[in-house]
Amino acid sequence: MRTRGIDDQIRELYMAQRPTPEVMARLVHAIAQGHPAQRWKAWARVAAAALVVALVPFLWWAAHQVWSVPPDVGGLVAREAAAGHNGRPQLEFRAGDYSQLRAAMKSLDFQLVEPSMQRQMRMRLLGARYTSLGGSLAAQLAFVDVHGSPCTLYEARPVGALATLAPGDHQVDGLRVTVWMEKGLVMVLAQPLA
Image 1: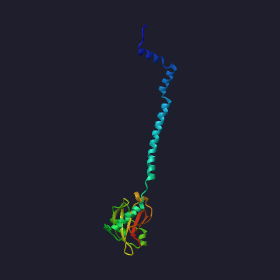
Image 2: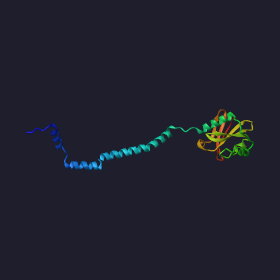
Image 3: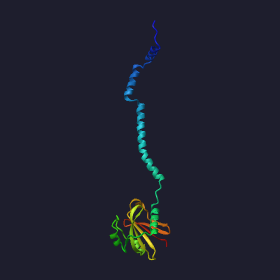
Image 4: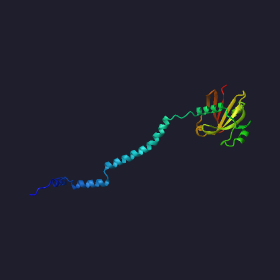
């Protein structure tokens, strides 16, 4: 009698454990079709990735809306106007009326306009210079009121931060700074408090 080696015995044992032809047919079919659990997991991964891609911009926007406090544009512009008034910069153009300034200040991207308050307060125009206000090109006009006090008027187009500027009065460094819109321009007047 011939003895069998251990390898042959193990091989025979596992060959006897082979799945039935029906089980094999089901396995071959499942492999060809993809296992339903695997298809669901793949679909879930795609859906989760799409959700993350969709949520990231929304979460970024929401975080900036909640945690970013909009700057007080009116206060910033008022402080800038007060600093310009108190600095008393040299005038580039001497003029007694707006038509002279319009002719001289050709680099402005807007047309200077005479505000209604100038006549009401009987202010006298001395001249102007180019400047910036809220990061935009502006004209800085120098006036003297009826009491001989210097006043400074800024005119600029309402672009960038200036487009969100709300009208109102501010007190900065001993000055009343008034902000308003007139004839399509932002007007900022800095004058001594009473």
